[in-house]
Image (cartoon, rainbow, N blue to C red; front, side):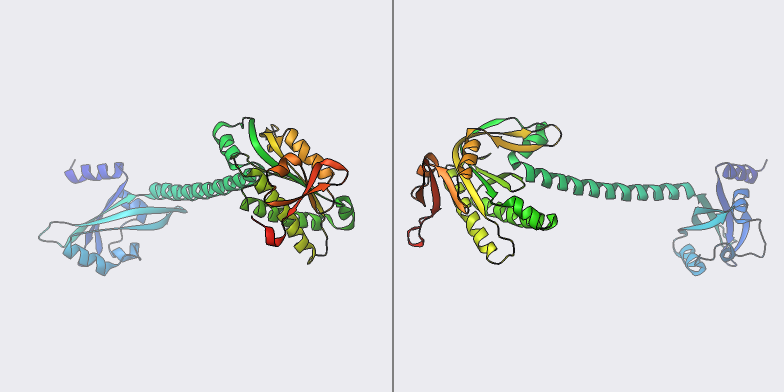
Length: 342
């Protein structure tokens, strides 16, 4: 068996197409069986660009003259399936003939894998973006339900340990005639109104370092000193309370629905923790919360009522008036403009 025959069998065995190209006439002088299987039987009159219309013959000749090598790719249909081959032209060292060796390697599977990898990468990137977006939404939701410190503890350990916070101040607010508003207006209108009002309350409270704990219909609860200690917790809650009412006064003057609130405040200690195993809600409870609710129940419309212990902590910053018929409770108002100190 000749060396040429052995080489041809080896080339066919490894699935590589080989042809000899006459660079002067661009005809194919020799083609192995694999090459013929891919591109058809040899036609002596055929030239290279008949098989590869996209091939730039002038570029090929120039490359063979300058560097002696050129690599490219081509795709074609083979038995109704798209096939891609890598083509490498190498100028042959033959003093008598101006020829090049063309080696074609089937890279269809490689291209398919590259396409699959690209598709998978795009899917992973898209899924990662979706996961990140959903994570941000969950985090935002949880931060609306609990203080950041509690959220960080929950994220790290999976639980929020109950803690005693002392001293703190609590503010609880509700709206007078809320049931009547529900019957007089569409539910969507009431929800939209509450969303605007509570968002404004959140912004006001945040200015004084207060943390909104929960809303429940017309009930709004905010604290100062949870989870971060605040030596001026009572002043922060009192400032928030009077500004809540000031905001409602301004809002009622320009809106068709009138919202009338009453507020109760108290100072002392509370227990803070996540309540529930399915629907996680951060809440505070204890005698101080109960006292604030009791003070709210005795508040007149658009007023803030507290007890004397709370009032003693803010007496130099706010006007304190006794509640008629109840010696243990007082009303809290802004000082007159000329006498305000904070």
